[in-house]
Image (cartoon, rainbow, N blue to C red; front, side):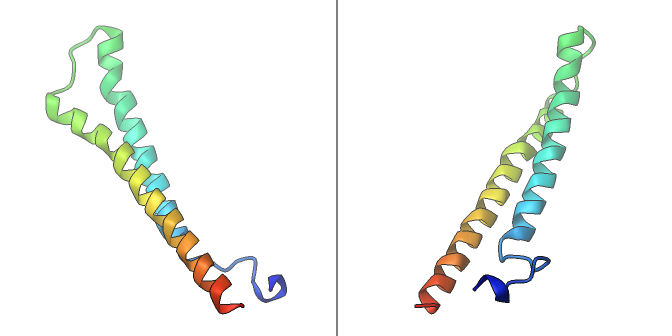
Length: 82
């Protein structure tokens, strides 16, 4: 089966995993930017800015959905190969 798979072909969940990683990274940067004034003793950002930190969790969930989609596709392919 390996000889039929191309190295540049994308698996079914790859796009979700990449998108989730990007959203997670944006959330991580937002968390650092939001928490920095608290650690530096300057005026903190407004409360709604802490909502941007939630992108970390959203990105984690999107990437997890991509992993599960990839697992499901692999199982379907294994069942069809029997």
